Image (cartoon, rainbow over all chains, first blue to last red; front, side):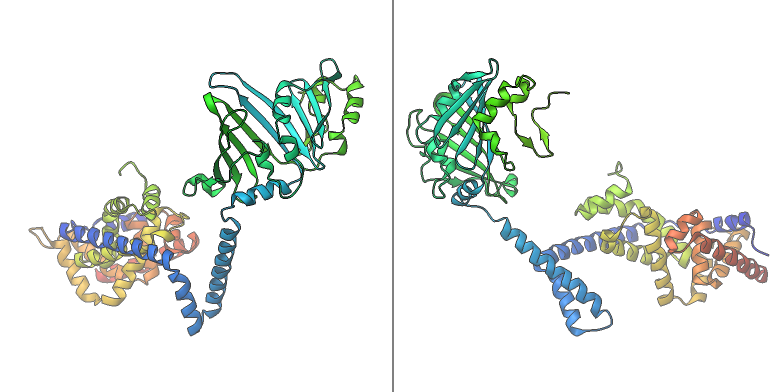
Length: 310
Length: 179
């Protein structure tokens, strides 16, 4: 009925394929590569000139059986362009003034400060939280300090669970001229300036316009006026979209350096900034000293910090 | 470039690497050439088809979605190009004569038995409907399995099997008549 498979295979093998002509082979390669180049150039042109969109629009306007399909594609392309423009405008480079304004209008933030007194000294650190109403809470080592409206209210030592005095850094930094005052939530006050006692001069420049990181982060550079600790060169990193600063690095004389790393959090409970409420918890022996360090803070994900390993 | 497999060469080519594209052409030239020859039966024909296939490859490379192997995809382009070529240019009996001469080329005795078999087979293949011819050539000449042939021909494996069955019936009949 049908031709046997083996026989058919054998017959196929009898077909002798002649050796290809070398010149023809080379010509094929040349022509194909030329076409490849032509195609590449056309693609580049297409991307540059939105020629695809233009062609679609032309076809659509001329009408025809696939008009609806073209309309849909053209519509989608237009939406994409509009979204692209929106995205581009939405991510335009923020100015220094906008960064300050965004920071000033954000009601809560936390920061960790790292400080090195000279090039070879040990790095010291402390943390602080700022909430509405100019309330500040600071943790330096085993001491937690509460401040309000520019005045220290109370400090507690977690080892002794007794009222104590603020840590050296807390005093040094927070008592510096202008710092507390600058945490007054007055809209015209640039809060970032507060870290440098209001001495960041006007000449703030953006420095990373062309670099890859500039897609997400904008970098400003400034210099402070001559002050108690000399002159500072300051670098501020801010998020392009939210316009919020995420890090400030200040480089002083003889290798002195301060790094402030910011994070932004949801509104903490009133008691978080209340020294009386804190004192009550301090007196409760069921609260470990460890848990008292950050008591009242909730990180994203509703996890208390720090995790005690329980 | 030999260290790269087909998919890697395709990706490099899509990114604009001319060397990768040229390597892809060199690597598959003989496959396309052989398949084209078996389709049209004369050297000038398959050289034209091969050239057309690789021009199409340059144009369509970006549309390769890796749903099948690169080779299968290339076979599809080759078969479609060969069909078009045949439809446009074929004056069948001329091709058959050319094929007969081609098969006898380089032999002191022009047409030995096996050459005659080849010529008879070619004639019989040309009498098959295009779809059956494609299925038979892919499976018996190119060594593809039914699943791969189905991918090339964009149909189900069952359809390929059916076409081959029908083709084998016709071939038997045609070749018996020839004898």
